[in-house]
Amino acid sequence: MTDKIVVLTTSKDNEEARRIANTLVEARLAACVNILPGVTSVYRWKDAVETGDELLLVIKTSRALLAEVRAAIERIHSYELPEIIALPIVDGSDAYLNWLAGSLKP
Image (cartoon, rainbow, N blue to C red; front, top):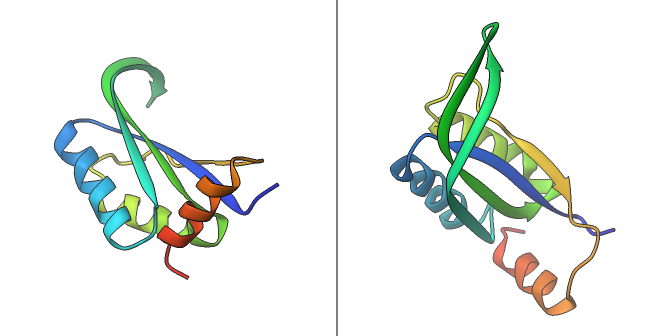
């Protein structure tokens, strides 16, 4: 098990997704953010089933930075309740994990 995590969030459009990604990487809160377009989300919101086109952000960071990542997403995001889910990175290539660690703020 590593101390690195992947954080998932969705966004309504490319402009917002890029704003979140750039903010996180520039602040060294994330080493990398992948923006995946073409996501269709089906979800329950305010007692109704909704469907929406979104972009998925895959954010690589560390467990120690999760609170700051969460705060940044909540500050920037247009959604009333943005998805913020953290998944552990159990293992990976040493070279990639070292790069990831070196790209984050200490």
